[in-house]
Amino acid sequence: MATSLSGKRVALLVTDGFEQAELTGPKEALEKAGAKTEILSSHAGQVTGWNHTTPADRFPVDKTFEVARIDDYDAIVLPGGVVNADTIRTDELAVELVKDAARADKPIAVICHGAWLLASADLVDGKTMTSWPSLQDDLRNAGATWVDKEVVVDGKLISSRKPDDIPVFSQKLIEALAA
Picture 1 (cartoon, rainbow, N blue to C red):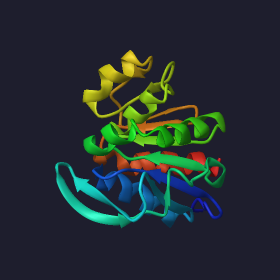
Picture 2: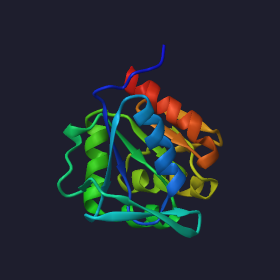
Picture 3: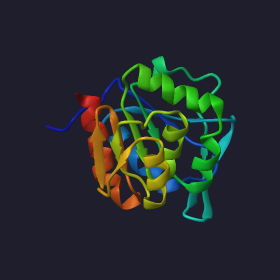
Picture 4: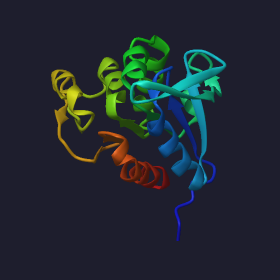
């Protein structure tokens, strides 16, 4: 029997320059399983995804970081993309949202460069996780144990390396939400 996430709500936190597949892949998997997803960003309107280094499609923003409340969601997804990850990690409201999710013991699923936000929020110390390989020094310096695996689950933290890992990443998030 398929897992049903009916009634579950998941926030996807991004700014312009996110890796498009790292938003659309998990979003589609979650919605197919019955969850409601919302795109949260620093500004209202639309955000632009990227295919690696090339701007791609635009997506409507459901709520801004300023009005979003973690109590409205069952989990958070943090897509990567270098531009997105470098920008979002300096947004105090985004940092507070992920800290609130961690305090509320909600699943946080992060892929690729999205882990920078968790490092900036001081949420990786003592965690085992993966990311895009270029982040391993940053994560180790922030206290994480970095491993090169397609997906790592450490408590409520789910991490993956790259777009190729999206199917197993999405499955682990669905399993966490169904538990």
